[in-house]
View 1 (cartoon, helix red, strand yellow):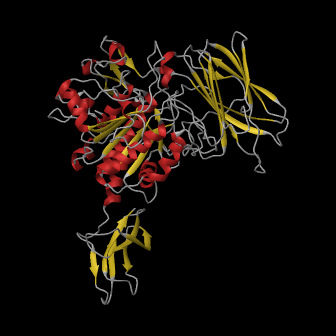
View 2 (tube, rainbow, N blue to C red):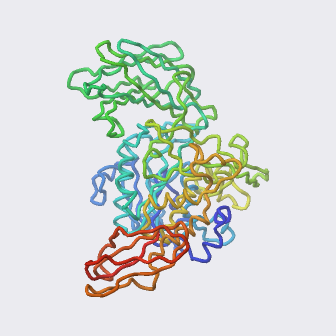
View 3 (tube, rainbow, N blue to C red):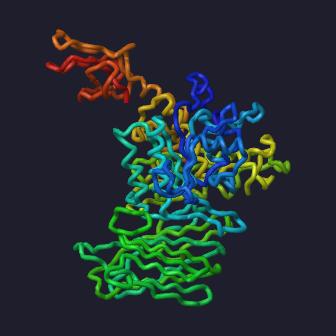
Length: 603
């Protein structure tokens, strides 16, 4: 069981942890909503809302607060289940469903109980914001860079509507965006979660870029022409996302870069740009089936970033081989312009990913991972062995990394603004989730575990680590519904462990070490015990000696709080706090403080 993998069987049983009363949102490729793993015992759905950003047929309906995509309510999903109607947010590849199962799946048959997710009674919100297509055909790929922030907006609104604490798994899959915490998606995460914003936590991984050179950076001088070299090793679409300043150091506007593309057959396209007229904010170009170029000003970039940067998003859709991307800066520029960009292959269309050949950076992370308040994880190999439906004994792929070591396909490096963002690491190999009954993955016996009778298979690696973290945080929110992302991050980081492999932590790729789920749950329980007596202590305004005495636990912080009425209003910190040392402490009620109720909060 997953609880056994994380060593929390005793915690779950002792405290009755199952995610009940907590919402888990999955932003990914959809879900097989028909599976029993995501239904109540009576057959009704556990999905409160679903949102498909690849289908705009319902964009103008009354139940759609975003004005894009199509929203499905719980009742509409139940009607579809009863009538066997196919809904558009179905996961036809299968990976997204497996990941949802790790966080929140609940098999309806005891023989499959080992595949139960961490929060089997959580309420689900599902958003289909992306789709990488199928390995033999990526033409159906849904990869609209503008889809992530409306997905996050939808989840925030629906979590508030459900009046539940919520944890959100953001799996954007493609590596693109400004990666500096300034995209619209990142700013939403940081605005609605974090310190003093309880009940909402966002989780993501660094990404799965297969260990390739996915980041380039450099600068270009006035009048200079440079050439970025890219080795395209797959026939499927390759995404290059480049960012450069909209203004120079004195605040004057910078001229647009001119862009030319040379294909492996030495066919030249461009130069494109600057913008065709003084009033034009963007210059989009297309050569069908070969390239698509989106050159946007800082006001019209595809990620609605608030970073004063222009964006060049280039899709290379032609044959594999060496491409040259030539950039030219007009001589009128007053100074050199720095640039950074990322490269994103489709991992489903080949095992030999594309790479930059020059202007190499140290690697980078997904845009969502650059959000300051997101909980960001990497995965490590756990050396699990298992037997598939073909009676083949399998173990973690050696290419994924040796047991205990970081997964080789996990992203490395910093954000564009040079921050280390990994909080901790989580097992990411040899983990099994439910596969859709009809999907690409379910048709491969090699991926299906024998004990699962064709219904459960291997989950993807770095993303699986984030899905496990999502389920664990749902249990933490069940213990303490007022937990904030900042508090959850602090608990998880402070309880992470160090071994011979991670003894140099904190380090960029490991964060604070390896997840200790039992310690995190125990710390959350201590954190939630705000009352040191059965009830808050009330004092009248004319009371003589007003003080609270209590015994502390070492290294926990105790804060005096007040509210006027016992059951109504917010608790206010009074600025009196202490760090526990195991001894007895006394808090004096401030002289002249109004009558009311006082308590001690453990942080």
